[in-house]
Image (cartoon, rainbow, N blue to C red):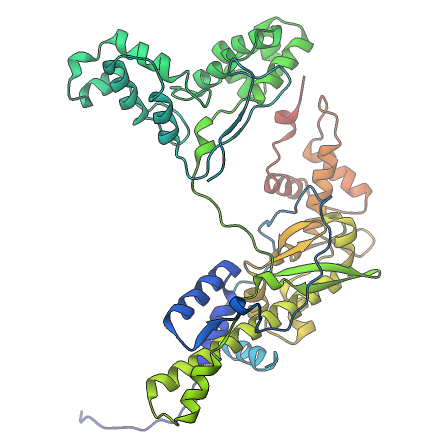
Length: 487
């Protein structure tokens, strides 16, 4: 077969560099966007920080409402029915959407003198920012009166403590890693471990959860509840973990009231004392949108603090224009700077349009909370704004809204719906809120089973299966009825 050349005419949809940048910036979180802007400021001299002069590239205003009375923030749960992004298939629709969207802290320890807390009180710890558990223990070792050999053993033990505060080595294992194992006798090991277990936080260097709880209980003032709690921790911890109240009552042979106080005392303990020094800090949430009330109506406003304050350096831009420079490099830099400013403008315009559409449909949520959430999916907002679902998905992912109900991710407002007996529809978010409200109001000695919750929802006109209730309960991290039952 002879090789031949054939010409084929076809049409192919491609994204311009500017549109690619706009799509990428839209799906970034505020923190990621700020990092992107910082890199651009360092790389491109034609971009400058307008915040240095108190200016802003965008004309925005923000009236921050007083939400000081808000206690509980709604969670950013995984919502059902939210569409996933489809980059390749949705390119044309996304292009259309963008083209038409418009041009060191002090160390504080609250406890009593003996290192314990009074019965009925809770222990709270606040440690210096950036201090690790190992550094905290070594600082106490420096003040501990002991001979050099004991101090060396304690230092070796500190190196074997994990992030939860537990000792992960044994006497035999420690002997094998010491350079002078003959100095480590069982007596010296026990003495060093005893001193280390007296360090703060209380419960550190325990070798098991039971020993950790026991150390914390022994640091508390003596009382009937404390003594009963010690017995439970030492002998009957599996029964407590299994919520076997009947078996626990038979095993301890104490009065029900005393047993209840002892169990409550144990539940206030910290089974992972080292976690107070977890330095893997989560990024602070910066809301992109603030919801404010105008008259009797809720509206969305851009959070000015979340908007990067950048602009084109006019001095350099005028110099390039005056000299009619033909430098391709500087012309490209100027074009990149203009694209970045315009893409950020489009990003916030799109987020504001989407947020306002959400606020319009969820007015009752801002007054009454999650129980008043209307069922809504991405397609509802996409149809309303004449955008594609993928654009709505990008505009709501990792974007947050400050509301009277707390700070929530925009995706929180989307979820599946369940048909009611009256022919209407209820949001899955509202149903979860109802389930949580029912469980919070239940009698501790007679908690509501999933079947009973199903029946109560049915009386409200919401027909759901028992397995659906169980799924929503688990999504709320609420244990089943037999584990919630109190004495």
